Length: 137
Image (cartoon, rainbow, N blue to C red; front, side, top):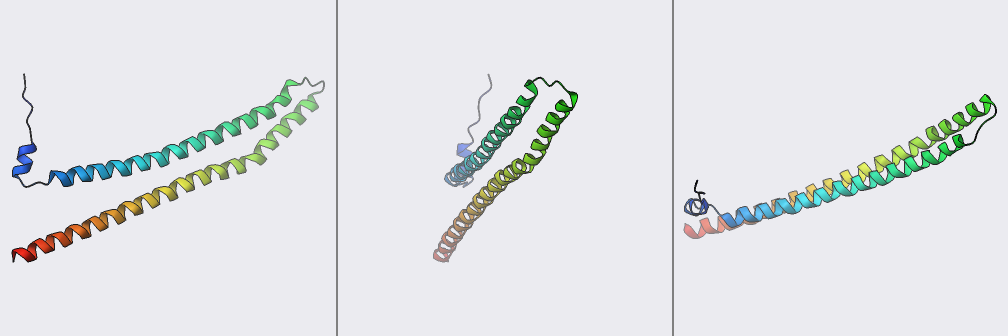
């Protein structure tokens, strides 16, 4: 049976700060979870909008359930349904675009916050290292 190698002692001997790595992993997971939430919320809104659009379309197809005695009446019904769909499509497309835009804005805000956090952590680490170097000299 193969033995599992424990690298924890190796990293301690190599002066690798495992606490920093754990914090980095936790921060990465936190931002990943927030980003996933943004994506899932956008997907849920898009699905809801799709359902609304399909239900609207199906309700208009109800016009075909009434028997028409003249072919011209059938053509008139087809024209009305098609025209209604074509007129409503830009509204739905605009709503999809709004969902995408809001998700993009939320994602950019998240990325900016992550960058600001990383910058502040880097500044703090640099100050700490400078202080250590100054004391050693």
